[in-house]
Image (cartoon, rainbow, N blue to C red; front, top):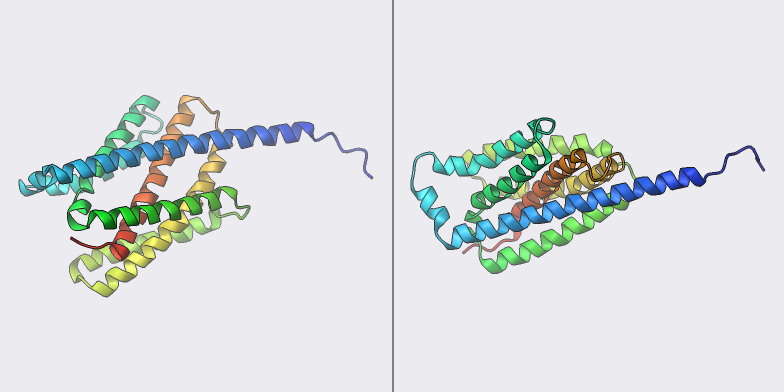
Length: 238
């Protein structure tokens, strides 16, 4: 027996502190993600039921493209402004982004039945929860899959652009299946990455809040895209 080893009480305490920080950070990230989804769902439902979406899109001009592309502008602004913006500004941008996303997704309520949307949402929530739990608890390093998932995502985007002109139902099915697989994997990957980020931040600081907002955006986009691809596969149209 080696008696020269130092006591491990301090190592254990440090590991416990890191685990607590990671848990608090991840909980904060998921809380913001849920807030964003609630805002998106409310705005999408209201814009569709009130006729606001149809009115804006039907007005002609560039409004349809503004509605579709403005969420990307918010994403770019939030990522570019991580160092420059305050935590409050970044939070307000995230809330505005969630609302704009809701407006751009209003067409979902016009194309698919409410029962179908509800069913697919529950399937998405269950799948997302399982994969997030797997990513948080697994001891397997998922970072090596990150590059593969990102390349697959680029492939799906390119294929979607091509199919926009081809209008192939078979290609749309393949893209949808691929999208489900990619965003299912990204959910586990991002959750593990966020857990590791949380272990290295000082919880409660402005920097931690800003990182939590950007991490929430990642999970939010995973959830929304997983929902949309599943809706293409399983959704019943009006």
